[in-house]
Each structure stands twice: as structure tokens, then as C-alpha cells.
Image (cartoon, rainbow, N blue to C red; front, side, top):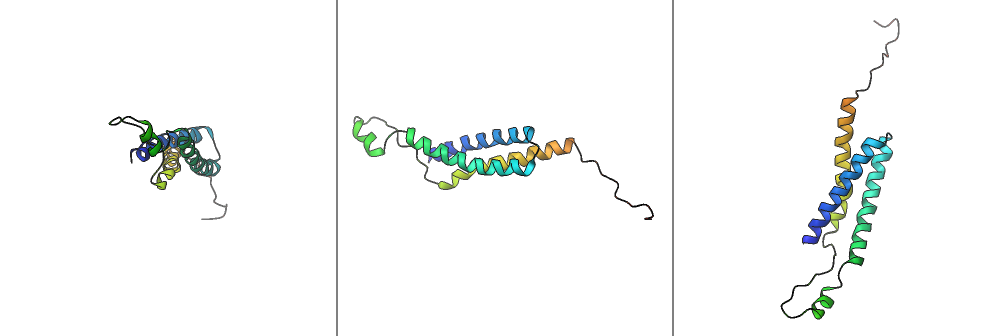
Length: 119
């Protein structure tokens, strides 16, 4: 359905923005990633439920109130629950890409671990 497609697009944009903010503002990488995943799932569920509550009524109610031949909107409901994973998946992919790019600009200095007498 079209509602599922639009939900995926909006969720992926939200996940990408959250991931970029986390990559540039947070230093604790594992905590940021966990927050993006958990927050992405919660954000998706919250967006879905708020959209369903604020959307138009059921198809039957909308059809009964419409004139013959008129167009009407259906409810904002998802038909594929897998789209709820679009936000955390997009956040994870963008976060890994951003962190890899940031770490490539600032390589970790290697420390000399050799002990005197080794050779």
C-alpha cells in the first residue's frame, strides 16, 4: 500500500537524521548505537499509532459520509508490520557509514608495545 511506502520514506529520513546527529555529537559509540536501535523501534511504533489516531476514520465511515462518485481518504494504517524496522535499520546503516568516515579522518595512534630486550 502507499501508506506503507510513505511510512518507510519518513522513517528512513528520521533514522538517517538521528544517526548523523548521534555520530557527530556522541562519543560513546556502543551506547549511541543501542540508543538509535531502541529509539528507532519506539519512534516507529509511536509514529504509527499517532498516525492511526489522527488519521481519517474507517473506510466504512468515510464511504457512508461521501457522495456517490466522490473520493475519500482511508485510515492511516500499516499493512506490513516489517516497515516498523525501517527507522532503526536506516539509523544503523547511516551511523556505521558516518562513524567509519569520522574514524578514517582521525586514525588511532598506534602505541609501541614492544618490550626492551625483544629482538
